[in-house]
Image (cartoon, rainbow, N blue to C red; front, top):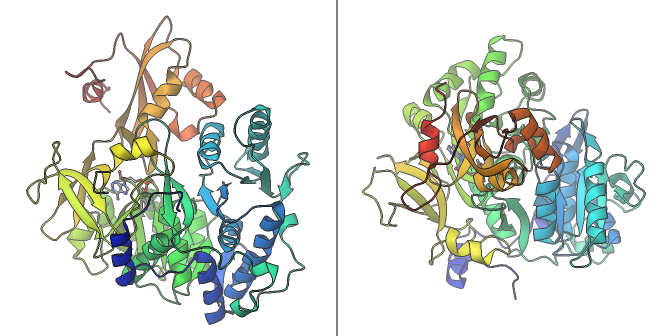
Length: 555
Ligand code: OOB
């Protein structure tokens, strides 16, 4: 019996028969890639590189270490690593034993991590030591100690530090897990030794990873992705981008982000026999230098980074002629910005409208220029089903805007352990309600024209308004709160809090430090605070956020 809701048997059968679902796990994929091309370079990080054979061996050795810790098939492990080769090594090490990485972003803090650990009932939490002036060991320490004091629920059993565990003697260094005595892998036929344990134990319909959804109501939900669906996601995207052995993918955005990992990203590149280059920071200088030095052919960005890249490229310090595709997605790219990319970088822009929940839309490399610059692409699978509906759930006339609902071979039919929410987020016949307003153009490509979900998209980073509002309400001076997305030239939108207060309203800075104290990720902090006497309500008594948007000072 599966512990997670999934596709109907009939759909699963259809997707298998169509060849979308390969019946393979990521652990076994890596083994077969290593057999097919052992000496090719799979991964590059700074001066270090790993061939496919070395990546396979590293995954085996880490898998053994994880097993020694007591991590078993099906166990969930919260992974919060920045862009370093270790992300990829750890990810495949977990896959090899059938454990399930739960992807946290480097910017997440105590609130988000605790939520992910609790919902997934995680056996372990994997962190860097210090990174970007933040000590993740301190966060882990607090969490472990607080959870140990509780009588109900399982404690967090292990913290693994990719770096120095410091004074925390109960934490494990990733280095110590890495069993160098294990012989290099010799292929799947030697599968009786412990280092292969679990490799084939996992089933392709099992959970392969849990992704955090952008969230709309309450706390963010976890999206359950299986080996079958996620591998198809990566492969279908890789085919559309025509990836092959010569492809070199630069991972600029966090690898933990679905876009960077599998659209086609890291996994699509490895499936195609290409090379993944890890970019340690998203600054245009670092990224463009790596494109030059490593002859990068494809990379992905969120819209706010694009102008910085174009500006840096104009200096002409770098050879960028290897770059074929620049993917941009996560938030709406302005048409004008899209038009500037080709001439400035000499690369084809590809718009990507995707979601952790599944559906990915890509503009095609041979779409007319105008379509590429003005639409957000079309689905990657012939079996992605799309409905565009009005407020009553009725399909709109083609060309009219409406909410996008979707179902298909890589869009799971429910969130992890969220029965009540699933009944709202999915229709009775398993369509996911995206909350996005789209319009289908005559070409079949989609244009994202707005959103009906209560979410703020800050340049690709998603902020669930209600989650932040609940934190705001815990401030002693605040009696009512509403978070809205104000138009912003750089970020597309930025979070602004309207507060009704007793006495003096907190300043933006005070509020930022208050929310930091509460362990909320910094990107969710309101950029501005506006004190009001009361919040306007709609006819049905909900906070009228459109009316609040009208009250924003003009830019
Ligand atoms: C990606 O995934 P998430 O889960 O962080 O966010 C999904 C939401 C979408 O529902 C939509 O509201 C928005 O982000 N979005 C876009 C967009 N791409 C995503 N809105 C307008 N234009 C676009 N191009 O953001 C994601 C996942 C995989 C690939 C790319 C992006």
